[in-house]
Length: 542
Image (cartoon, rainbow, N blue to C red):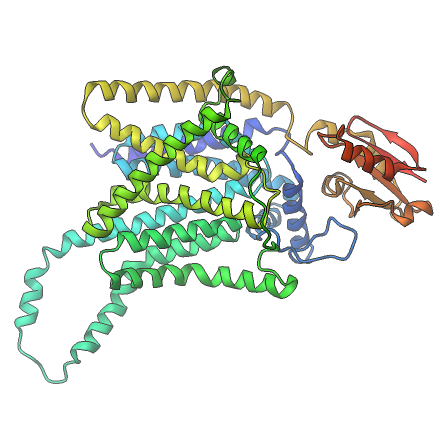
């Protein structure tokens, strides 16, 4: 019996399950933070013919360089096709992407182990993970980035899979090659070098098209998130390690970079022309803070053990978390170095090892790039689920690979341990996911929650005349809910506020009791009249 159609049907059902699960989890729409609204506003600007610009600010419209364009472009495309607002398009896109990611990971599990059960297990882990469904339940670019990155990994694997298949066929072609070599020379025959060049040109594309595709998908990942530079570095290093000779290494790199570099360089050049910076980031030394590192540790272990009941009592012990994570990282690094040494010097590899090897390499590449970014470019980046989500997906792949390896070793104790670990992961992930889905159904996250939607301050702002300027410390949220550009509130009262031509809305941050905010709040509101008050913030005029 051919099991491929059955497995394809199961993957289709898992994909459909992911679509259904995120759909029922977000009945009121996706969650919103500042970046999410910025993506949506940029999509509206594209639809209005204003280009990839900041339309949520009432100041001069500026081209956007801080974020890449593909997510906003995707939202604008869906909005154009279905005639809906980009906010609704984000939900359509993320619902489809969540299901697709589950299906692709199921295929990953099968490709790296040749076990269909492993593929189903990996897909179920993804579908039942609370951190990943919360990520997809927000209008952010990370779900699309994960989707495109997974496709890039799949194309990269396909290249080595096809090469392995070609190498098997070569043993059957040696006889024909010898007969051609012994045939008499004919007049007008092309020189040997010309024949070699023509053969290389003819076969080059057919043999390397998947590398070119992996490069193109890597470029698309970069146009979704700048963090894809770590993906680019991962594939470059993997090619140098996995190819058998320097000639093949450089030729493979040429095909890969031909697909990857042009879109990346074009977008960098565009940013340089319009803003003077390739990514709107400046170099400045600011090491990762202890608080941010501790937050990252908590987020990672909450991803692995999503049930709060099982985390209580030790999740705040940062020394313990650091030791455990260090042991895991060192063990994975040693495995990666061992496999890399065998592949580079002995060329001992099979296509089954490509996905776990490249995935482990990507984990260290992504975390290294993130450490550099936090230390030199963007100190404000929090180590939360959003930023760590690509590593989460990679960790699921590696975890499933090692569970399968443990089971395959044959010893009964190891099989019992592997089976117990599988059961533990499925049960804990599923119980936590049921609770998460219920919480998501109650209200969207962040600025999309009912508190912002039903805020009396927002209602008053909507009814202000068009010629009244609106100044606020939450410009993206106010823009989203009143659908008009606003001014960002800085360190002094706007002059237009003194003449009665403006209103000022101040929304309270989580640390609103801090001395810094209280001093700023007192300075901003001095001499002003409170017009409207809510739990989120206050509205003032002169």
